[in-house]
Every structure is written in C-alpha cells, then in structure tokens.
Image 1 (cartoon, one colour):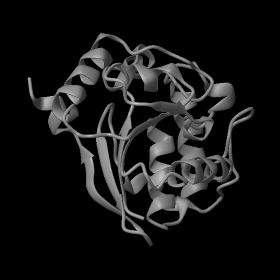
Image 2: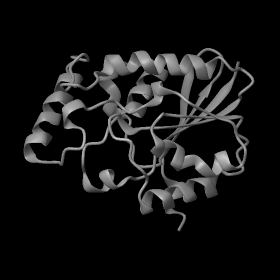
Image 3: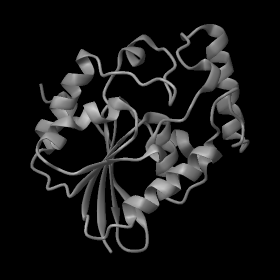
Length: 205
C-alpha cells in the first residue's frame, strides 16, 4: 500500500498572535490572518486530488481546510489529532514565570522524561498513544491514496517523530509555523518526509 499525506498545522488564531498558551483545552477560531492563510493554502493545493481529509476535534483545524470540505471531499474528525493539553497553563499569557515553566518542561522532554506534564495536561507519551490510534484509522483505508491532515503544532512535531521512527526527544527538530505543510509518503513499509515546513504558499501574495 502506498499513500501520500499532506499534513498541515492550523492557521493563526488570536491566542497564537498574542502568545497565549493554547492547547487541547482551548477551542479557538482562526483570526483574520488565519483565514487568509487558509485561503492561500487552498489556492496553492486546490488541484490536488485528495481522497479524504482528517482533522482534529478542535474547530481551528476544520476552519483551516474548510474550502476543501466545501468541494465535497469527505472528512473525519479524530481526537488523536488534537493538540497536546497544556493543563493549568491553558489560556495563560507568556509571562516570565510561564516561560520558565515551559523551559523546564521542554528540558525534561529533551532529557527523555517523556511522562512529564503540567497539572491537568498531557505528556508526550500520552499523546503518542492517541496519535498511533489515529494513524491506525488513517492507514486502514488503502483506497485513500492522497490524504490531507490538519492538526496542531506540538502534536505535529510528535507525529513526525512517530512516522520517521525517531524518539520523541527529537520533536524540536521539526520546525513549524501556522499553516505550513509537511508532505509525507508511505511506500508500504516506511514513511518518508519529502517536503518539510513548506510555507511557500503563504508568500504568494
């Protein structure tokens, strides 16, 4: 079975713009810039014959690829594609204290302490479990040769580790910004990233 996945992060939200912590616990809308990014992505990739679309259960992912859904392409929501939950820091501003807490958590993850998490949040190991479940669903349809997936930043980094069989400690080697594209192919045995952090469509105007 061969398959091509076009995996994008959602467009900008107001919390993104303001630097406020936004994870699985904040179901926010795209802002004006995010809506523009969605239009730019559609303009660049509208001629790709997607067989199916998979999105998270957070509305910012659907809003980011709504024009493709409007074309009649079938879509499915998978909670496994949701963003990592940041727990008590959800909705909090980027203060020196919060930045320090994030740095400490990232240091834990880099050191291999992948069960570390904020109170009420999720760890990378917990996100991996639900992402693997989501990928089982996506890969269980061999007839879907070309698939569009819209998800979230930290979750995308973790998924790239899983697909390329790298430890989750390598998550920060996969950069991203709002509505960038990672194109991944599956040849029947392994996944290969053939296009990484592509933002050319966002520079078209």
